[in-house]
Amino acid sequence: MMAELPIAIVLLVFACAGGVICVSGVFMTGLADKLADRTGLGEAIVGGVILGAATSLSGTVVSVTAALDGRASLAFSNSVGGIAAQTAFLAFADLMFRRANLEHAAAEVTNIVQGILLVLLLLIPMAALVTPEFTILAIHPASFLIPVIYIAGLFVCRSVQEEPMWRPVKTKETREDTPDDEDEKTASKTTLRLGLEFGGLMAVMGLSGWLIAQSGSALTDRLGISASLVGALLTATVTSLPELVTTLAAVRRGALQLAVGGIIGGNTFDTLFLTAADVSYRDGSLYHAATNQDYFWVVTAALMTTCLLAGLVVRERSGPAGIGFDSLSLLGIYLGAIALQVLAF
Image (cartoon, rainbow, N blue to C red; front, side, top):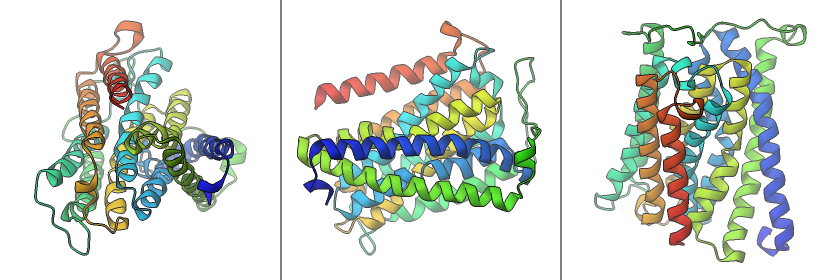
């Protein structure tokens, strides 16, 4: 249906769906922060699991829809391209937070553990690529392994939060995760109602993701653009806008652990796109159907996550332009990757 519409209408649908995702993301940040306080789970856990999963919903829909249509490259690159884009967003958040380097102020061991988990999950597709193509009901074994490791990692994160074996050194710039005072309007709402509002916004984002998948596929066919390029730089970036909006909104609210945790947790959740897409892709292993152009973004995402982890451990107070070496590295790697992709295609 989308392929039959004029190109201007397709672009309009794509832009409007992206706008809805952005607006929904703003409201979700506030709700997530309140749910973190109400449930006692903490900003890092809620940001990494609940907010990260919710803001990633539209991207999940894009990957699954593309895979069902037999578009392996679009499904794969949308998944891993979003991880790279979202990690780069932390550099913009660092620019916004002027007191110190964001990774210094948002010291939280849970975020470090989730970052390690993310690197591990990014290595699984690479392992699938270099092993023989083998599937069970047209699903590669790696797709079974990813959710198992993801769930096990969440239990480890929860354990680390409850009984940390080490804590970051506190400085005057360190921002601790403490409950915020609720305004009268929010205080009058039950936790269940806040959760239902959060779920409603998730549904809206899921529908928007479907529209982006359809319009993105149409643009690939009509304009003759590489599916890898569309997935990594177009659909992935647009469906990642909630992470940018929620990260900046969280920094503005002073919820720094929520900001960093939302990005890392969202990225970790995004690896589940690959499992969902492989299950939806009926022509064999998604990992072997993807191209080297798609795996280029796996390497990019892994490099960026490693730099982020270094920043969280080193905790540089400030650097050039008021941001740390890690943020500069994130921007340099991401912009360099985009330049290489554009020049290559």
